[in-house]
Structures are given as C-alpha cells and as structure tokens.
Image 1 (cartoon, rainbow, N blue to C red):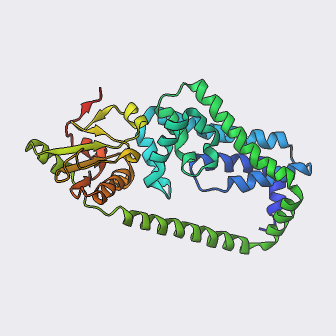
Image 2: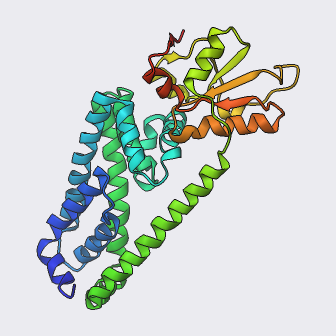
Image 3: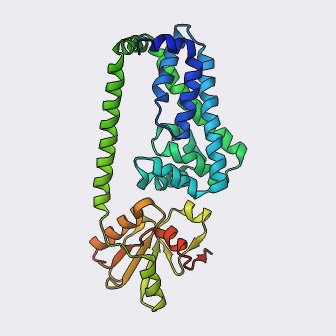
Length: 311
C-alpha cells in the first residue's frame, strides 16, 4: 500500500478507466474518490486534466451503452436484476420510474449523483425505447456533469487531496482494514434499515390463486393496479377489471366504496412494497379487507392467469 502514489502515477489512466467502467456496470468500486484524486494529480502536471475527464467519460459511456442495449432487448427483467443487486431493491424500480415520469430524459442529467437512480435509469431509457441519439445526448450530458464535478473538485483542492493521498499511502494494511470496517458498517446499516422497512410492510397477502378463485366465484372484489403510468405504457396489460390508482391518490370516503368488501392491490415492486403500503393505508382508513397481491402482476402472469389489454 506504500506504493499507492507511485502506482497511480504510473497506471493512473488505466485505473480510472477500469474503475469508472466497473462502477457503472454495477460493481461497488470507488470510482468517485479516484476521479477526485486524478483531478488533483492533474493540477500538479502528473496527468492531463482533459485526458482524465475523457478517459472516465469514455469508460462510463461504454458501460451505459451496454445497459441501454440490455434494457432495450430484455426490458423489465434487466431492471429487476439491477435492483436485486441494490441494497434498496424495494424502491429501486419505482423511484426510477417516478423520476422518468416527472422529468423524462432530464433525469439522466442527475442520475449519476443519485444512488439507485444511477443503477436503473439507463436500462429504463432503453426499455422505454428512447431513440438512441436522444439517449446519447442526455447520457453524455449527465456523464460530463458527473465526471466534471468530481474531477474539478480534485483540481480545485489539489493540495489538500494530494496530501491526503500521500498520507493514505503511508497507512499500509491499516487502510484496507479501515476500508473494510467502514464498508461493513455501511452494509450492516443498510441491511438493518431494510429489515425495519420490511417490518412496516407486514400485512396479510392474498395469493394469485385465492384472487382467481374469488373472481371465478363472482365475489364482489375490487382490484387496484398501483403501477407507475410509465410501467403501464411499457407493459399495457392488467388483471381483468382492475382500476388504476396511484398510491399518492388513494383516498376514499365511505360513500365512495363499501368498507366491507375485498380489495386487492397489485404492483410490480420487489416485496410488493407499493401495494403493501397502499393496503396498510386502506386498513388505517377502515378497509380491513384490503390486501396486496403476493408477487404482484408478475406472479399472476407466471401462473398463466388471464390478463386484458389496456384501452
């Protein structure tokens, strides 16, 4: 570890290319500290600032183009894969879709700065069939902001950062130990946070088979589709008879709906996060027979149960 600075001085361009590419692929590599460090070293003349920025930009763009094409080819299954890799999978897809619904491609300009959104924004752009040149303009714009901000930060505060790099180089194995401890604490905190979140979603689920049996028996069941409008446009089907309701607009009075009827809510989020929150909200309003659909729309279709095309 004492050779950290000489190693960076010799292989800096290769290191920053690899770190930027692998981080955008989805691996937990510290690309941002390296971009900041390389920006600082470029101020001293050890590297060209323009080449530092260009190298990180090209590496990140290469990874983004891969995700864009995967999203275009495989759609939602790619989003699910990315969000399973995330420490916050329950909100990953929904948060990204909400951002795209509100801001469109402008979301790509800030996506790299927002955990979760960074991971899912590019494949989502491919999934919704964004024209390639239009995607390229916004993605490159976002990458320039991201790389430029962090490398510029290093360039401006080069003296302080170079001293920090020199100090870290003297720590030897202690640096690895500190990094491992910090990473363990962070991951443990996120896992604990997620466990607490899942406890808040404890509500009885109804299985697809149970819902189908109620529908076949002509029971008076109300079905709510709580998917994001973007999700519905890219996957324009629903469980027969379902009504589209956005979670933030769920508000009923006793005259609007019978409080003693079965209400089934579905979404496409991991752990039925959105539909479970809506069910709990309805329970608090007095609709105690409101339940999320276990597995959501995906589980319904996996069992080859009927769907209908949206109008």
